[in-house]
Amino acid sequence: MVRPYHFARTLPGVLIFDADDTLWENNVLFERVINDFLDWLAHPTMDRAQLRPILDDIERANIATVGYGTKALLRNLHDTFKHLYQRDVSSAESEQIEQLAVTLINHQVELIHGVPETLTQLGTRHDLLMLTKGATDEQQRKIDKSGLAHHFKSIHIVPEKDPDTYRALAKELALDVDTTWMIGNSPKSDIRSSRAAGMKAVFIPNVHTWILEEEELDPADEGILHLERFTDLLNHF
Image (cartoon, rainbow, N blue to C red; front, side):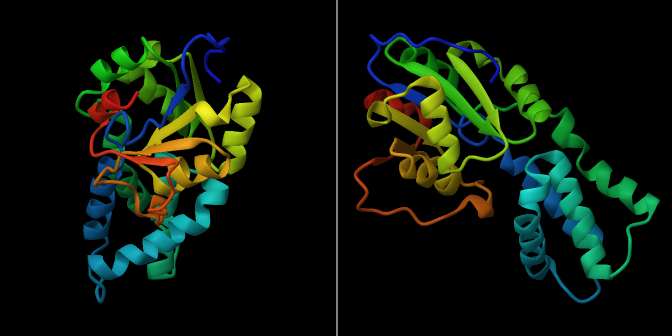
């Protein structure tokens, strides 16, 4: 937790916001690095469409040990190279792979359209929280660059966003899950996990959502509000 907060109970409901690909663009930057990596591989028999599922499987297998973020991606790219070529990565090759990801560290945060103005208005009516997963230093750097931290009563950086994460947060902050909403782009981490913990959810899709975060949502679930864009939140909260 970055900043503790005692909630003003007079405000109607709590809104919890995902960060990456909900408040600012993120995965599109990772996709660019991955595309550059697959081109750099220059595999003699497989094209990008054949290589990508192999990388996806390695990322899926490594999540439990390496987590998320730039360092995790670099590990996954190295492991993909070793798997494909059945040998260790040379120091020169390792340096080339790491150079591909330099932009992930140095990039400026690109806010999604309407985010600052929408948060400003919502903050006059609700308690706003941020819940983001990944490497603490990397997520904190993006939060600082975004200039959005002042909108949130508390900010939470966690290694994973599963149902137990939401239950623990609700217990820690004494949240009423019946009036708490999780807002995000990830069907897996933001929507299904928060619903499993008893919260309601707002799904705002992002065309660049990571494939490992995609899962089917129940169209009959009345506890999920589907919106097209972030600014649409003002029509409902």
